[in-house]
Image (cartoon, rainbow, N blue to C red):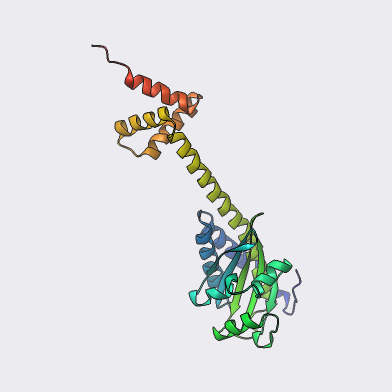
Length: 246
C-alpha cells in the first residue's frame, strides 16, 4: 500500500493514540453478533475518533453482490451504496485491493457521477480502504472530509490501521453469528426429539423455567454424567412416569 509521506515522522500516529483507537474498536465490536449492527458501530467509532474526518461509511460485498452499507450520517448513505452505481472510490478500492485517495474532489475525474453527488452533499475529499472480512465478504471503509486537502498521509495510515483491525473484528462477528445460527438449528433438532421434548416439559414444570433454560439443565446433566443427552432425557422421563408405590 503506497503512502506519500509528506509529513514529518513526529506528525504520524502516536503509539498511545493508535492503541486507544484499536482498543475502542475492539470494545465496540467484541460483543456484537449482528453484522449490520457491527458496521454501524464501526463507522460511528471511526468518525468520532479520527480528527479531520467529517463522515465515515462502509460498503460491503457478499459473494460479489452488494451486501449492505453503513453511514455515520444517513444523508451520505447513498455514497456507500453500490446500488447507485459501481463507479465509486469504494468499488475501486475493492477491485484494486488497495487504498484509494482523493484529497480534492474538485479536481477528481475518476468517478464523475459519484463525485458530483458527493460534492453536492458537502464532501471534498475521500479515502477508501479495502477491508478483507472472510472468504464470502469484502468491503471498503470510506473516510470523508468536508474540507479540501484535509486528508493527509496521517489519515491514510489511520484508514489502513482501522481497515486491517476491522477486518479481523468483523470476521469474528460473522463467526459468532454463524455459531448462534447453528446452535439454534441444533436446538430445534433436539427439541424435535420426542423424549427430549418430554424431559424439557418435566423440567419446565418442576422449575417454572423457559424451554431454553430446561434444555441447558439437560445438557449440564449430560456433561456431568458423561452420557448422551437423549439418555439423560430418557432417565428423567422414565423416573417421573414410574408409578408411585402406595
